[in-house]
Length: 304
Ligand code: GDP
Ligand code: ZN
Image (cartoon, rainbow, N blue to C red; front, top):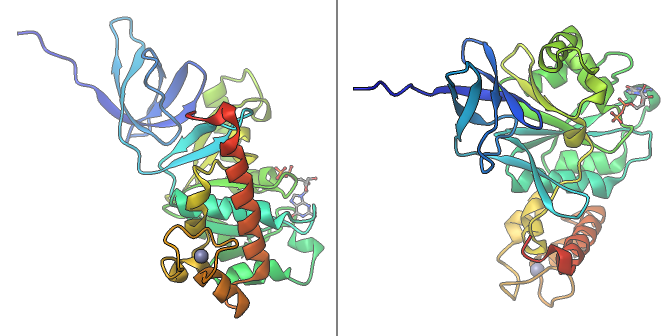
């Protein structure tokens, strides 16, 4: 009887165009080719792989995912960027002036995936008062870390929050995400960058998504495509679930399919009128609803 070779299990720690880097429990890394087109492993995926007769590794299967981080591609379609995350670190800063609706959009994405969202308010060296929208978000239960990547302050708190989590750092351009990631990962970054890229490119020119270990059981998934992404939202109807302060009121509107826009006897709008929901957050809801409804009404996006 011929022995069938057993496949090995591993975690995808880097995703390239035609291959992935797979790491086993012992920390050994193998480059594995992607031969079957229908297999599309992402960073964070658990995969099975096998060594072929020529010694090269190939991926043979992808384990079911718990969560998927998605973004919108250039044509407004969904693109999967990372798997099995537990956390999204949404970075904001006093400069550039915060786009609070964009921040809400990340928070909505986190609620819908679902993963925990943590707000990182960076460049603390430039302010002494906390913006009101940030206080409102804290009031509805979002965790806020205050940092200055420049001064190196607050980084310990971020690392603690990331312990035993698998997170991605996202947010508006210029808020200091690269600076924070560099500060969090420090020297190990250069080492891993060399390993996965074989010195061909510097880390900043590669688009490969990479998973880094923080040393406290925390893991950070990073790539330019993850950092500056705009999250994909499946349908306008699901956005209500992305606003956590709406939750107690959903199902209490007169109409089951209430959009909470102009319908009569809307429990969300009643809560808004009595001050229980922040007008700024409600405005974000309206904007996001509009945005997603318009996107899905475009013919090029039907069925895609
Ligand atoms: P990204 O686009 O979010 O990745 O932001 P970068 O990390 O590239 O930072 C954008 C700019 O903000 C750079 O000029 C950084 O030097 C600066 N920056 C980053 N963190 C801080 C900070 O904590 N304080 C101050 N004052 N500037 C910062
Ligand atoms: Zn309603």
